[in-house]
Image (tube, rainbow, N blue to C red; front, side, top):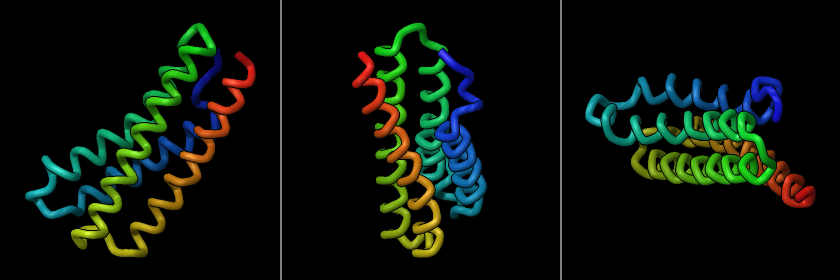
Length: 119
């Protein structure tokens, strides 16, 4: 299909994963194999599924992997809300990560809408 590294949505998702990794490194030690691990996995899954979709042969396959990336973004959003409720993230940190994530979610939604109109 195309080189995923040129996609702005992939670049933003990659940047978000880096931010999540850096921030979760500061979580309490008891969360390193719990919430921190889940957040890292979900954040990496967003960019990984975008890149995997780009490597597929058909528009249908590409859309399928973008849909999975969207699901991972929703999963990460859930963890962010939980972190705020538990006091692991401040409101400011939560808003920064959430804003970044919302931008990615909107981009994925737009991409899927466009792909569906093509097929």
